[in-house]
Image 1 (cartoon, helix red, strand yellow):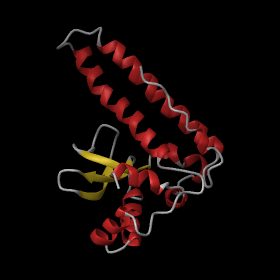
Image 2 (cartoon, rainbow, N blue to C red):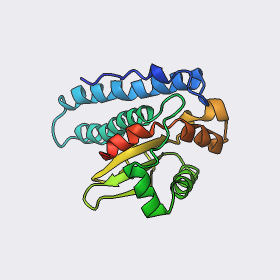
Image 3 (cartoon, rainbow, N blue to C red):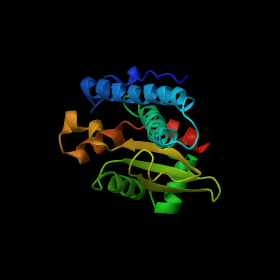
Image 4 (cartoon, rainbow, N blue to C red):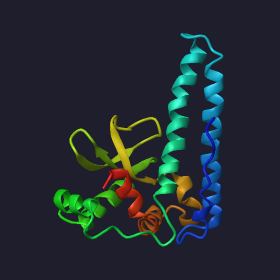
Length: 189
């Protein structure tokens, strides 16, 4: 069975109230609970029945909700960790976007698009390329084979408690909380 990971180390994170974080942790825990329920329930349904079909469809939503939240919480840290000025990721940003600042402008632009979802910096291991992308829903818009390096939740629950409708202010706080050492590790750099 899957277990809810403890992200209480993020409490006190600048730009994020403990109320917002605790609510977000509770929401994440619900995904873990539902993954476990679905794993058990799917075993009880006959292949080909509508129940079997719908449970398997729902599983993608719950699974990705669980994993995307884990990636999101794991790539944040109180005070953040700056990107290494001579690291591989910085070199890639410079090569593909011209500078870290240009990459950041693009990533933030994706995060401020209308709608609910996720802004993701992803790595295509086949072409050895990285790109910024939008994932609409947990189970819609994920790119097959793309490895999430940096994940930013832009569903309303991630910012409304502290920022109301000011998503850009939340994104600014998020960008200051990124632990780039985690992102670089995901890249394998």
